[in-house]
Image 1 (cartoon, rainbow, N blue to C red):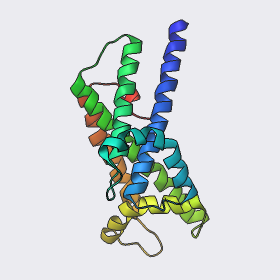
Image 2: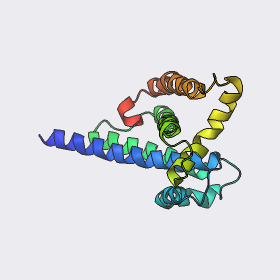
Image 3: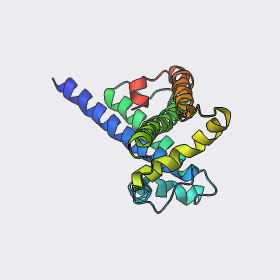
Length: 197
């Protein structure tokens, strides 16, 4: 009974860390896509993640250009430390460093792909029910997915009123998740349940 409670507690902690990692990668992607910084949802994400990101901004410096290295580093270090802690608590001991580093990269990639996956679903639903929505959340989703949608739209023209680019992006997300992230997780030799949401 005690081991079941302990294992449930570890899974809960792992899930909470993955949710926080999700928020960190959302912050990274909002910066990369140049989404509206003053959007209330952007501000919330920044406030929630700043305590951890702030630690890394000290030596990586403020955001320069589109890619916020401090946020990426914060997510990577948080995930690696959490995996080490879980291994220690379980009593397995310290996993190999290369495997941990690969698993950390896989976790970041997994979180980024999940964000795009959910954002695409929201975008498609919005395009059906509220194509001209001006809600801050709707605007943020559109700004988030536009950088990956625009190049695909150039290659895949719409068929009449039907835009096929979301289907192409969904297939690409699933391929990258299955092939690249799957290969990274296998190379790391660490349980997929520890790496992703």
